Image 1 (cartoon, rainbow, N blue to C red):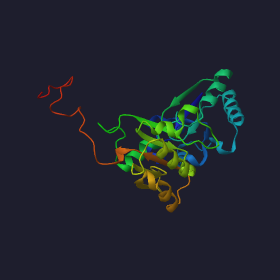
Image 2: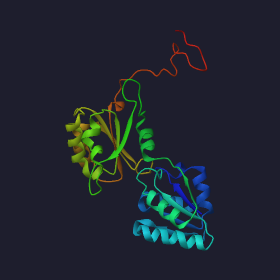
Image 3: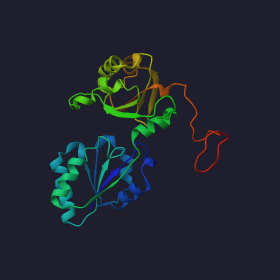
Image 4: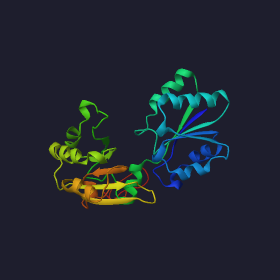
Length: 251
């Protein structure tokens, strides 16, 4: 069987208990190169066959999965963060289904959760933002016409950008043109939860300047939105005046 496993955001102890157990029992591991903490591979058995998919094509990955299945072996396909976000698992799953090979998916802790943790923020603050846009800048990989940064910027929601560090100038320009003001709070988290993690809080208007100064060109998340500021309303969940299913409010 093939197990797609989220490796977590970087720190070894942020893989899930289930993910760790699957790694410990795996006969074959195909991991997503430098995006996965290599220390996680220490959980594997001594005779486990390990492949770095950074050097492989989709066809080569599938071929190793097929070989493992034919020999009755358990395979872990180890993806960074959570496999559902920019993990390219759909194309693998479609091939496995075409070949009649069983699989399952073990979710993981995405880096955008780790980034929020290190920044000490909440993505959804009352009267500030109740929506979170997860996206990327358009580079060599195109985005659908309705998902351009300018279009998303008009919502003024909290935004997290993956895979966009090398395009920060474009990001800054398009978000401001789309509706965010230059003084909108912004943050950059490099390698969230890794031992060499770095974080910087700035404004959208100074985002490119900040990233160039700190030499951040890859493996970083960009967060934009007023949730990085200090103004918000208390939630109704713990408001003493608010009645819930479990307690009666004062009003």
